[in-house]
Image (cartoon, rainbow over all chains, first blue to last red; front, top):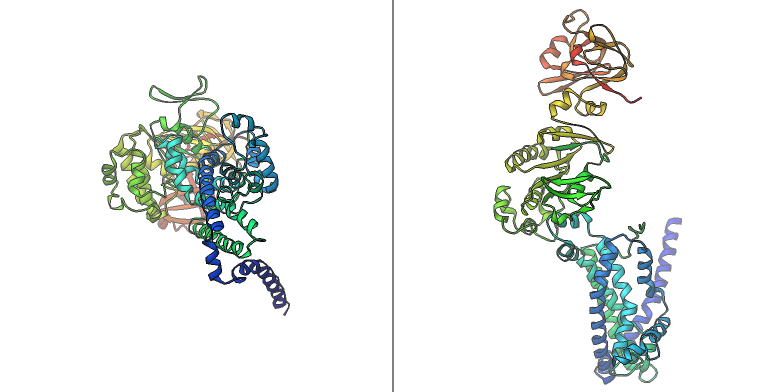
Length: 273
Length: 318
């Protein structure tokens, strides 16, 4: 009797938790009719926001992967003094409040900021441009990619890399022909995670890039702007984001079910020296 | 050449050092007059620049490539020839996970040879195989190694594998090379008790002192005294090979043998057409016919005899 009662209590807790998490998501779809949602999605605000988001997040993701992959490979395969520090640094944006990230980016790259003078002289103005959005997204989303990428590379059996070297492949060829393909699944999942985070980026973007429709207004910023002006438009964009995020999460789960990988970078080489 | 020793003795480390995957603190590694590693002069060639063919313990086949892709990784020119030579042409499009242990080994060998190495390195080539496949593969590997005429260094924890595959055997224990020689030398003249036990000989510890006629008498820890034609003093181990021990009833003692150790038969174990009999601290190996004639069975009292010339001495650490 006691076991049934205990299980019952667990089930009740789950029901409440599940309902609490599900309700807001459901409400987005149920508040107005689907027809209305589709109409609003074709409005200017939504379309501009979608265009800006795709462009900026696409470029940001490409840069994250371009710089993040070799960085993760180095961190995963070499032991060096201060490695733990570097990994912590790379993971820092994960715990940094987005507003803090925004201010940081502003004072680093903005007109009055650290690099502002140099950039201004080169004719580049960063603040409140699409470049700012890209930078903001890169800042908050990189750790998601890099952490997963490190784990994916670490999961590659070192013996495979050794084998490649004994077969005449130098470090570069070993990376491209063995490490990369074998870590591929994990890298893809990391990219999906980073993309999802980038889509949801709000705080840093609004502070550093502003919310100019058609220029820097991403879908998250559009929702914020529209929700007290035209709630239906905000709901429409939100519904779209829920579907996209859901699809991304699902794809990550499917890939990891086929080729399991670890999600956090374990400090296997943390004994630096 | 084979390096034999228990796990942790450092055998794989030697192999990795030769391949350039591990860096020794001191020493010299060279292939003929090509210096691959010289601690004194700061030379350390990268693995990809050493002409080695390395076959890993579990073969380390690339899972994302098919057999053909694996073999071609080291060099694409001889792929077909190698596939044929190892009889795996029909597996060219298979993935490594679909292969049996023996097939994987052949792919591993073919792959290692594809780049035309000048020395072959094999890490426990038979341990990833089940007992049944092992004996077949051992014979195959033996003939392949002979055919190839490449210098080969293999490491194993199994002395029998080493004997089957190598001309010279080095015994490694805790990072030290105890002895290097042909299998026969290791059996006949073990330099160390570990080598003696490795080759399957009996080892009887005791204390030695010189006696008349140039012989040495050893007072065994287990009781009794044994005469040996070798020299020794202090703490020694008497090494006797099982087939040099004859068994008899107390009444029928062969006079030419000099050592007699009475004992009780503890176990009788047939091996092929011979029988291994444990008598006290000794294991003797006699023909099945003799065992039957003597009526050997556990509990029977017998006398184990062996010549003084068959009693070899190895120094024992206290």
